[in-house]
Length: 380
Picture (cartoon, rainbow, N blue to C red):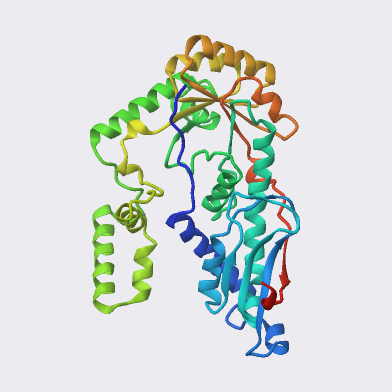
């Protein structure tokens, strides 16, 4: 079987940058530039406090790296001591971490911290249920692109915490030929809808990728009226002005660009996030194709895609597909997809497919229940 897989989303600079963007809006909708009016009215300015985040659910924790960022942005005077780490299974009553500092600040960051931890831990815990349901089967659970806009990397990170694997992060980092691609390609060729052969589509994709490598590094997707050379010149100009003026605003703009993030990751020998398509050979791009009939499946085997997605197939058809794959092309991996639930995933895994993609991990999860309880600092 193929050992190639999609990019694993760990907590890295790209994930943190996405979180900071979301956090900026979350702060604005909660406190604007005014703050917590109730705390300002009731809590003395010099009052100090100590409180712990307590679990009221059982499951897998995710989102702990968000807490220091929230405090840094909103209330640096509050300190945070984590007691557990992401990916750990916790029970009801577990103490996740403790906050100390100005009481007004504690009240201001409470809901932000709980909201982010509850959402990400909810995804991780839901993911864990699916992973445990097929433990020992040899199949792996994968997420999908059915994520909340703006939250994709964060939600995929939470899926990793829950023990599943990440499918492609976006349209830019893998080939996935779906029925709509076939329909549109058929229309362009003057054929009837869905008459475009999946096997021919795979071969055409392979030829396209080979051509991309022969042409050399591919330019990034361009904004309208903005050529790569102009964009590069603008970036250099911004960097020069930032260095000359010491502008923190311009420096922060540069720090959010993919090129800067990748450069810093390489310097620190860390994992390089969101590697642009121009920086890796096209031949390394995973090619996957979706089929929804056994006839399509049998036909596409001859084209040697890396992965064949069995979309909304019955368990019996999946089992037949696995047997035929094992006989003819054992190196091709099979992915089951479409309406898979906790009640059906075990039967799907028993067919022998290697991958099972589940949209519910990120669109039908249950929020984790967390609370903030005041503590006596002298007893901690």
